[in-house]
Image (cartoon, rainbow, N blue to C red; front, side):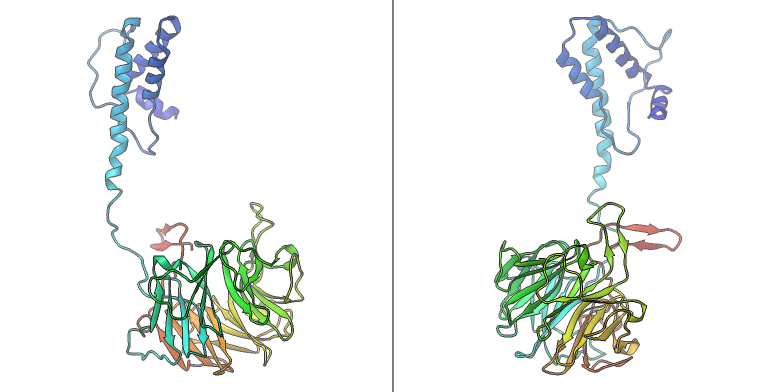
Length: 448
């Protein structure tokens, strides 16, 4: 500030400063000044901060002999006000110039024009596969046996739900009612509600039902025996349980949350009705009740609770450790008959299969992983018990792949549904919060 003032006073701008000094002196010694006129003059003299140099004057001052700062008599107060207003107008004109560049078209745009699959579910009764598209914010429905040939650009869905009327945005969780075929869709991060569509709805249509959900809801499943809807919340981590038919502002009937739960950025959820258990996958990020600076990253885990757990309930078991190979575990599916837990392992580019009874640092009993599998950042998974198949949604390459239930290793899928050319990787830009540029590597950095 002092440096800027020095620059202004050392040039040809000294005249208005002298006027201010003279006016202030006159004000101190004269009792006849109008306060409103001086208040206006004071406001006029203020400049709006622009973050860049401002134009102070556009006319040079006349050459003066003698002292640079002349005494201004009381009768010339109107001259001071006029001078200040003129200076304000010049400064405003200068600060408004950059606004002419606001509506410029971008030089280029980083945008993925293809759907990215964040979640998947199968409707065995109607032989359909339903996929969530988090990139273009749609719900896509395909025939269950759809298989995109390598030479084809993509497979066209038989039905699409999408558009502003649908209230679908950053959709990441998916459930299909086995009886009615209704589609339950979870919106994450930006829109705090669950939307439900009947199986016959398509296009830009409003949902048949909406439920206001906590912020950052991610996972969804339903206990059909008790007609209860289970949702996971990333942060603060929770499991919230509603009546299956809940809508509008209905409140949960149970909430599991608290430090004892060891929930840490909760994502996927799976239920075991036979043994009355609930499984939750955790990315690992946590903090102490939102205390600034307390954030930390714990190892990713799968925590197991009683099915009806509520409040600050400690887990019965925890699957955690380097042998597990867990790395951002997302959606899960439980094979109750064979007591196997299937996990979409996002950053690990794999599907991990554990025994449902595993505890501690347990290695998976099977792993689907490798270049032949077609997996790339899988976040959605569904166990099709009727057809003995595992269906996976990969956000990283616009594809959904199907495997035998017992698949293991680097195995090729039975079928693939693609929404983009073969080998086309997804940008995976989702709700970017900032942008940076690495000049050394010439890379654009976009944290999601």
